[in-house]
Image (cartoon, rainbow, N blue to C red):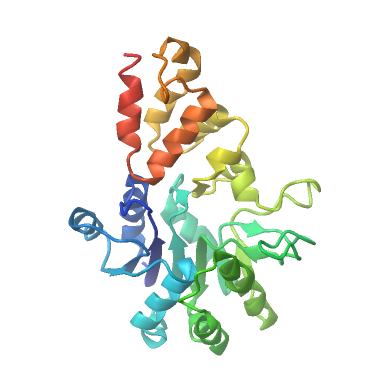
Length: 308
C-alpha cells in the first residue's frame, strides 16, 4: 500500500458528527497510513470516541479561515518536513456523501496517471461569477478533495501558498477568491500537471453550468464519482430519480431513501400539521438539513411511523 496521509476538515453548526462523515472515515481508513481530523466546531466526548475508531489525531479549532485555515493549521502542526515523507497528501472536507464507489480502486486509477496533483472534479472557468466581486473565475479543482504527490509537498510553491493563507480570515468570500479558486492556477503556472477524475462536459454541452458536481450529480454518478455533494439535492430538479439512481448504480447505503421515495404517493394521508404535510421536495430538503446535523434517522423514523 502507498504511504498516504489524509487531513479531513469538518464543520457542524450543531457541534455534531453526522453518520455520513463516519461512514467516509470508515472507508478511508484502510487506504491511509495516517488520518488527521480537524473540526472547526466543538466535539463532545461521544463524537471524539467515535472518531478515534478511524482517526490518528483529532484537532479542534474555531471556524476561522474555514477549510483552508484548518488545512493550514494541520499542515504546519504536522510539519511539511514530516508530510514530505508520505507518497501523497489528501485534503478533504465533509461537504459530500460517499464513497459511492470503491475508493481503493478510485485511488488506484488516479495514481496511475502521470500527474503531480489531482482531484475529483473541476469548476470550469467563467467570465464572471466570482463570489463577492462577480469577476472571472479561473478553472480549478474543486476544493472538497485534493491529492498532492510528494514532489509538490516538497516544493517551495506549495510551502509559499500555505504560508500565504490567512487562517484567521472570517470572510468566506475572501477564502474563495484568494485560495479556493487560485491554488490550481498557482501550481500549474509553476509547471505542475494535474487531472480530475470526472472530466468536464463543457466541450460537449456549451450551456452547461460550470459546477458539474453540484448541478449535475446524475452525470457524476454515471461517471462513477465516489463523491456526491450534499447540497446537490437542493439544486437537482428530480430528487426522486437521483435517489433511485444512487440505489441502482452505487454501493452507498441509502435504503432508507428508497422508503422515502414512496412519500410522494402517500403524503396526502399524513396528518396535517405545521411540519408534516410536506411535498416530496420539501420533505427531502428537510431530510438533507437533518442529515447534515446528524439527525436524519430520527426524522426518517418519525415519518415512516405515519405510513407503516
